[in-house]
View 1 (tube, rainbow, N blue to C red):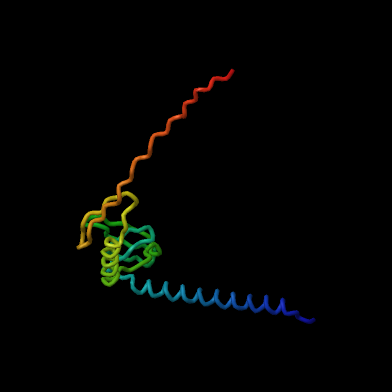
View 2: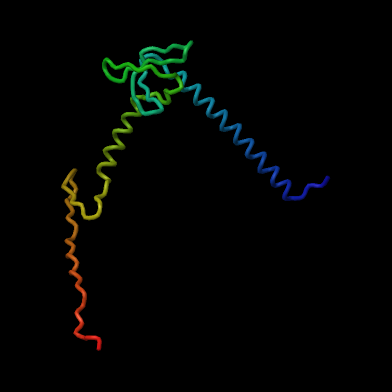
Length: 143
């Protein structure tokens, strides 16, 4: 059986796809294992639905985690819901990004900009109101 160049090319592409599938699978497994090592009692975490809290207790038998979201409020969630462990470094970077974003925000069209952080206030040029349109009068009468 002879293979033409098109068949060889298709087999090569298939082999590359299979290689990347296995590579991504291993990478995800490694990241999940690292996350499970970081999930410990006392760690500040974020769930996949955006709730931040501190781990009070981990039950390995039932895969439940007790999170304290605010003083006196305790949630019981599944262990897989915890998607990220919050480090002090993560919160510092996020705070710095918010400060930069607040300064770099441009005003919407027609919005006045107040003077903040040593930046001059910019007042958009006034826009002249449009002239009213009235139908033209005709003196002609149909005969």
